[in-house]
Image (tube, rainbow, N blue to C red; front, side, top):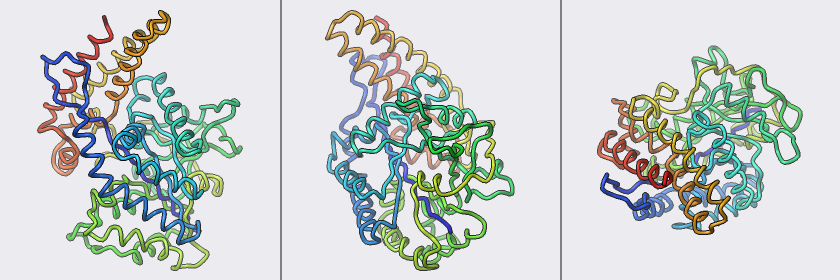
Length: 420
């Protein structure tokens, strides 16, 4: 049996407004632009795709299943600009065929810089999933699938309120240089890691990047030898996993549907037909599973040893998208130096009992956390050629240097704001 594990990442950052050295007010974010983008992507992707997936779940009587990692930053913007999107996801959650994963609330790189902040953001995100969708996540994905053995160990050691392991496993990139001859279509485990809440070892689902990227990146490429990709052909590729794998992990940005691959490419027709083709190619053989179901159903076949940090970004699958130059490194280090000041300001306000001071300090912490979102550092990337084109596509700035200057102007104000 090959179980298709469909996982979608949904994220939008709080984009900064143009902030010069002469600005002194504490209003950093471009609400007009953020609202415009939220509504545009809702129209092109979030609304039609989620309605289609809800229909597929009902049409296939619960056999079609999906999973999502939805950042706190996009949830906050949906609540403000497009609240009906949250309602659609609540309906999807009610079907029992949709699993929500845990991650950092602000889509941050906090694991690399502040374990305290990392733990706090994971707890914040977990509570939001509970409050909105009635689920307590049991599977974790780190920002941009950033992963190493250290990440795996930290997540495996997290405990719930009863002192038991919180997570069954995590998801990460299936990197060729780490897998070697092995297939990403099995469950693995980090080396030297204990058991999860079911007593089975903490597991890892690895992205099958070839099949995932066929949908996410190559689908509309008329120069691709497999264009146009049909659901029938893709179902055949999935079926070929049988005999050399248990899972087909299709991990991608949700914006693949309608935003990156426009509706006129046929991407929605492809998604609409895919479950039926996967079921029909070998009745009773292939199915869909959520990550937690996959971890419970299949055993790990070996260790996935990741001594150095990997991600799912760009061709290198490393941290160079966020830490590839001195601007990015400097900005990140300065950001986490300000953490101590922000939290000290809040602690002093809470101790003082001054209600106005508590409100102002809480707002400062919230703003600082929005500044930890990884996108701000991604915009500073100076990589060129194919990867550079991707970075330019997502950036609201004319150049990485503009991104750096604008961010540092904002951060300098934040530092002044909490140092007084």
